[in-house]
Image (cartoon, rainbow, N blue to C red; front, side, top):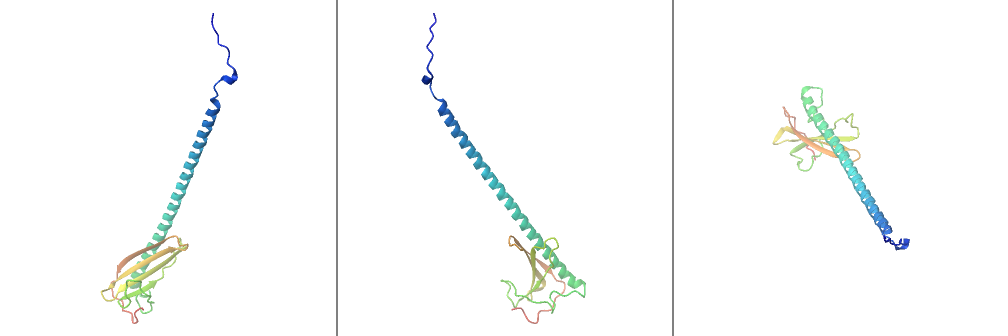
Length: 176
């Protein structure tokens, strides 16, 4: 004869099912929290990269505008010698402006040139200053161009030296 064991009562079974469900719930909640943190930081990283790219674009735009103003100033310097009816940059009718720091006034002559606004970048403020050393090298002009976006987000400065084939007369009244 075979012995059969009596059936177990339902309350006698080990009850691990409730604890497994609670552990699974905690693991699922922690995985959801980790996934949401990872997505938050990846979205933040994308936003920072996007802002960095936008700033780089604005900086490049300001640099190109300053380069355009510098090219305009070079052309203006050449134009004064090519045509008789063009106003001379260093002529008596030019307005001397105060020189920047590092350029002592009696020795240096500085003239502000106003380039026309760029047709494709009207939001950029352009300025060009031409300076020459009246004693050491009056035939070499230093051109300093700056461009600044009107919202103040970016600005750029470029400079170059230009050889002037003939000497312009020294100013009768040096800039102060």
